[in-house]
Length: 249
Image 1 (cartoon, rainbow, N blue to C red):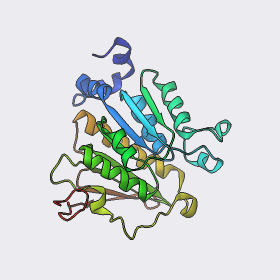
Image 2: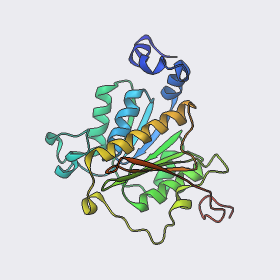
Image 3: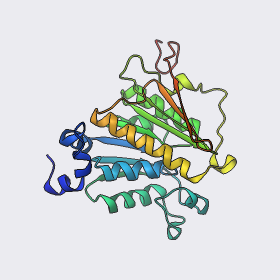
Image 4: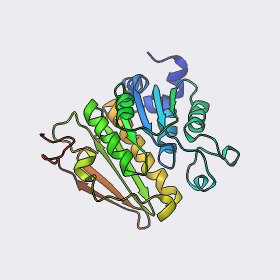
């Protein structure tokens, strides 16, 4: 049940007929894992925490550095050198003290991700390296937990939802094979600041849709943004029957 304070706090969402009290209760009951507390993780955590998601686990082993402040909107100059995950958790709590937040301050591998997503309703990939994405994808497929993956670099971004509970849904590995992909980070290629906010906001919206059951999620669809031209494109994604992660093997 929602308290009187929660009914007032989240009233602008509850007023939406399709969402209503049932949607807000679904958010309150949800447990999500956000991997990455940087450019994408900041808007994702801030929006979902303030929207009323009940429990959030933040996974990141990095600390706040000066070049992060150009785009990672949860951090301040005075917090240089502090844990990103701990700092982001404190910022979310300052907005919504009722949210329960766990912090994992270390880099996880396959087994670690499997443990974290096992009790979650949803995982969000807000990272910038393929090794972590592949490990998280395997864990989500194994646990039957939907994965919302976002990426942003230079002036281009993309978002998709991979839901292994849906027999027709591809997984992240169907789109990107593990061999032949090289990490290209923002520190190497650059990124324009508002882009991560745009992609992170889409990820947060997809999470709310998935958790509340309202709307049509980006399952089997890849949304691509060219921010310099302000053009969105959509590509259809199909499941790879020979995928070593989610295919018939």
